[in-house]
Image (cartoon, rainbow, N blue to C red; front, side):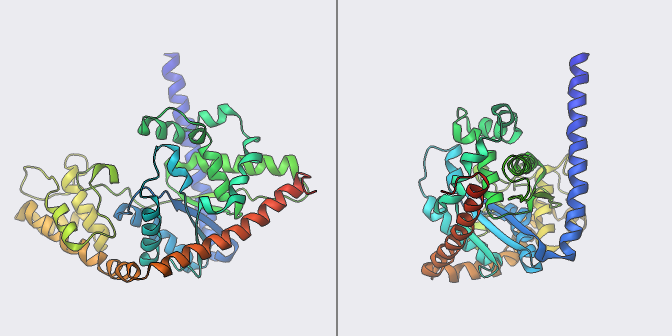
Length: 363
């Protein structure tokens, strides 16, 4: 009984924390829309493969919106974080270039948004040393994201994976980001970043704080199911890649599983595979999945797949066209990345100077 009460109490505490963070997120979002120039945003991806529709609707679409609103937006390609749970960096160069092309094709403007890679900005990574002194081993070990990453990879807990949240704090704080758009699962990373910023300022910079305490902007984007009803993931092979051809997309949708019922209905719990197709179609058209299901009705899974194929390919056609043009000009894509890396280094060097000054380490 005592154990059950403890579990319930822990669950209530997590729920209360999330509600408090959601309230804070809504308040900050309101202020951001009123004065976007006062906010700096940091977000990014690991270059572990191509981006898919889940990435687009889950994060990239919002990045473009924030950029166009006037927020100072920054995107990190977290190449060093690939080796937190992988034993190879094979194909990493192609993956990085692919990410840049997908960002640009999706509407990211390199004149407004800084795109850079971890490994090209030494001063950012050097922030790890003072930041590590501000957190305890216990705080790192109980981070739920670290635990889930370790379980998913099947690896032993490496030093890099254990300190993954601190590395993310470096990503956020080096550019003085004060907003970080995330999903609920990554909330602990922003919380520990706030803790590090607060402790650094209290210990070394009471009179002139160096770092802001960033707020999480909790995404309202729905989780995008893969074509088999599970979470959309490259590892499951159930993802529609942004850079896939129309033919590849059609083939993938055609072989996606459904069920034996002929009438099409939207029922995510009892009919996850059919509902995944309807959700995908709804996102690409702006329609309600229920309305699409009603329209197809007794026409069955074949008609549903034909509809999904058409609307997905129509939706992705402009992205694919822009991406194809970028593929013909790899020098431009590299120039975008090199320019972003240069700007990131200027910012990181300035921040590191401020950190060393605050710590009395400028000799």
